[in-house]
Image 1: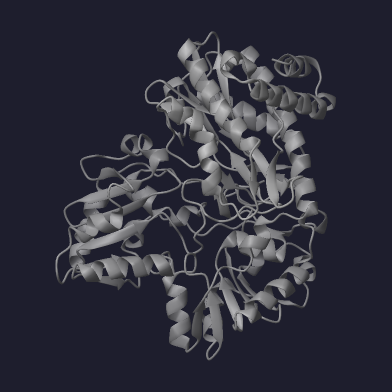
Image 2: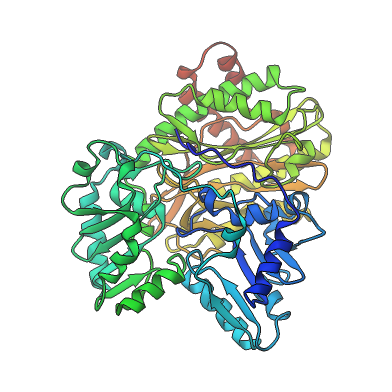
Length: 594
């Protein structure tokens, strides 16, 4: 199972920011940058690296803090504009939207000539460090790379690194041998004119080596670094005590295993060579170490990112099977919810869902922390229930449930907005407008080369027509028993990465009315070739009813009703054999034609 390392309590303490500010004065720093990141630049980070959370109390998956000597600000996106103020102490830090203005502009307006702004180069990407350096220089200030993170000096009970076993990911699910992946990627490195590439992103390393671990929450990754040579040979810097029996044989002679503590020395071994790094994910520390060793640094994309996103036949076959089993688990859970959940807390609902998924022997844990919001809590886009915030399941409103599972053969992510009792007309109208956007994306056909930015508007058109919108992207990439959020493609107003066959993306438009209710409908899609030459389309692979009781059928046009009926027919056919009793009866009721 994943998440083997218990999470520290992270009890809020308003004295931490003032303590850091005193430390800045001693270091002669005007400000210090605190990203929510670690040495590997992934979404899920180990507890030791949760510096932003420890400092501020904010538990979201994305945020950036700027601490000056007399003030501090937390910058978050639209998912967290309600959550961040609720979790932080306004007496020591203010919460700001990440674009109004961006943190870099906000700080540039506050520093003065001669000021020194500190940052941790071990957890800051090359490109990010350069943006800050340039902005501070224009303001007359200096960006200073620190040898030690001052938060670590204050965090007296900072956890150690996790220790979880690492095992081989079977070829039946991976679909390609590690040696073949390494040879293919090595050729790409050689085409760039480089001798090697340095990789610090853990999902890239896991995919290249066909290994899975348990160091990071919700994602089967192992803390490590990889140097991949142009000849396909790899040097893997990892704690060798984590490796299970037979793993060295699985990797073969083409992979040299070295202690993770030897990574700095491994970079020195590249002296005189041309080395490729990804500037948006490789850290400033890695680049500095390579340059200090005398290597010539070349910048280029992580060569594994696109091949990893284009799922092969085995990966798609595995994830389709995982979605069928996950869909059956969801139906069992939803049938229970209808019968038993009224009056129970959000935490009790989450526990039941985890228990239901856990009955599958292929289940490895949740793919992210479940979002379970009753009524007003559903309006907090990335809400996280706690004992202090949990509401009961209440009649006359929605219960928003966004969850997913990690299975040995695939990763799932599904959101269902569940009506509880009789709904006000406004809620059904909002639900149906979101559903119309969901259908528009699911049925989209588009030319090859189209980026997610062109698809995003499909999800919003009906909401926009009614003066409504949602402040998050419509979809993200999903891995194959890897990260539930995977690049490079997305469906969002910002993504111009072309969608390609084999990519798995989410389709999750929503609507959120503060202090009232939240709605999101999410299925996963696979990009595939369309019948029309030169065009692509989507295949919906999530199989679970969309609650017909929340639909205002009069707002759907004939094609939309046909899509719902066709989707529900697919769901019923795929899941009926796996269900019995109340769950089967619930499935039949929910998949009847509109």
